[in-house]
Image 1: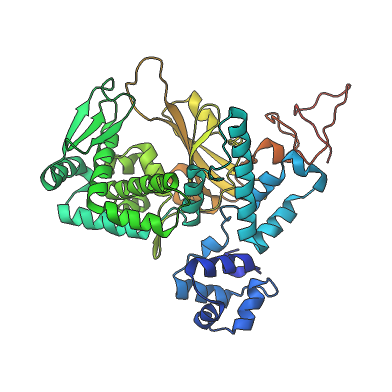
Image 2: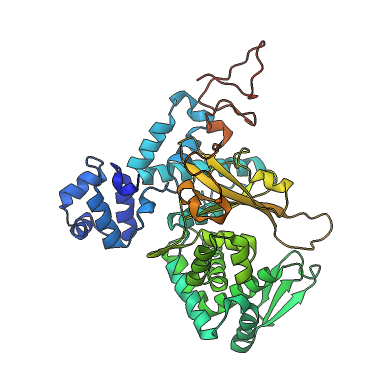
Length: 469
């Protein structure tokens, strides 16, 4: 059943959309051809959003209807995870209540999640003796992640800038490196040099403004060297435009502004290496065969996987993918999504998701169909990557990429060939153990905080933390 076939109460989403668009209730009502009083009822969830209104929304505001069903950056999953803290245990706030609050008041839910994260960060800083009471309550990384998530990881202005640069260079994305190197040299007098890693003193890329040199570490693979040059060219060509884009979102401090500008620079470089239309066409042609497509564009598996999460251009959207990058301990260092997926906001990934098994089969892509506690199903693929080759002895950098989409899109993927789409074999996964209520889980690391742990001398349970229903 599609979104337009359901009886939807989307008051909170409508209010958020109207706020993001900067339009009044009267102006939106006029665009939707309804009265302001009727729109007010919709926003207060006193009327369901009809299919006709959905279609008018999509037409009037060039809106992807999937965005109305996607979880908000501070949505139900994040709110539920924050409320699982033991300080709230006596309130017995259930998953459905958290989801209802998130739906009715997404702004308040996001504010609560931000405040809880700040509480955790402040506690960590106090433990380290580093908190002086004046620091920002939200880290730059978290602020940028939330902002990017709210934009569904797509920045149309950067796509346009990248396409313009490629046209000016008459560049072939399959052989981009020499053209970018030449434009840096001729257009800006910047020489690119590959340097021994010992000389780079821990850096993989460094721009020497005074000597007009871009230094890249010899350990970087060719795709990463091209990315480093494309990043620097983007800074020189469109640095001012990216600063204006960043400032428009009003980052709370200079550190956050700088981190957001780095993200925008990375996005522009990726858009140059994998031009939107050509990259999407290649994906559709090959059944989203990442190995074939990445070879065609000269990018790494990780670069291609991250680019998959940005394909949200109106009228030319790809499959909405999510992506995480984790280390062997399950810590998440990257998290991007153009579609719904209940990421853990304050912990790692579920051990039942086979992204962790990738470390047992380095370089090999493994697949899995999973089901989350809310009954949603996803098709995922995972494999290991290395950030840089030839690092100094004793320094390991093997990471795993987890990539996936809603199961309904799996029949378009070459990786799902032979998968029973009607009755697939799925593995039940969950969020962080402390809020996961799956009972028979042999890999559970903690009992859910809203359940009573059962300890019986005469019974050995599958789970190390059995709990009462």
